[in-house]
Length: 307
Image 1 (cartoon, rainbow, N blue to C red):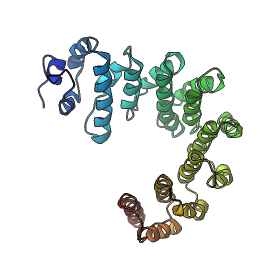
Image 2: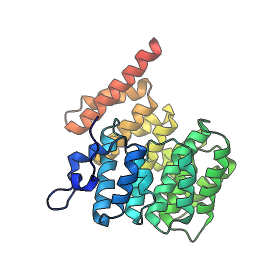
Image 3: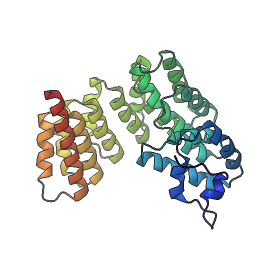
Image 4: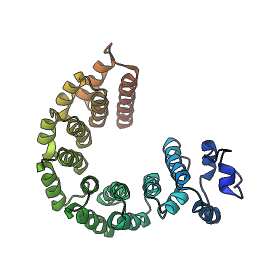
């Protein structure tokens, strides 16, 4: 175990007062005894440095799942700077502690910062899915949905916050959620419509398939991408021929999204499309790697089913 420094930021700072990034890994798995002196030192640091630390800790946590900075991120949700609070929420992306729900709802409904409310709405989406899967107590479903409904219904709320709330509430199998998705799709604003399409995928209802197949031909690149992703979430083999046609699209993002969706859908037709794409001479190295990874994952799933 790495010894804890007596003065956190003396140890972490370079001579120019910037953060020594490699040393941040030493902050992993901080105990309740460690967090108290860290908190006292934290509030004395410059806001730029606090932003740097939380941003870098988020990146480290994503790259290495063995690192755990949850104690710091919980502390940072109380920070006076909205960027730090937003990054703290993002850093807790793996947290499934139901105590997190109350804090997220409070931030969503009361925080002054749009970026914090956006982050809170996005994070609540994971708990909405857990509630729908019954992996958390049923009483949380109403609390989560009521908070998200309040934001969606508030026409004075910033558009991006409402977008993220629509996307977050989508996993819940409620009639009101279906109506929210339909209403958002009818909006003229393309960003709200893109969120509605994203929500269709998360709602996992086959009734949306005709809409998604139509939007695969959309001229709006964001809507088209969301439709590709939603087809993957829906997992319907009927979407494969339409997705395969998009492999001729010159946009690399489109090809990457199609590959991911074909992997999610699976089945013989999807595997054949991936094999054909893998033999295409003009395929760049990044896309070829994505195709090979998808094929390996589908092959592995087949082996598991055969066993």
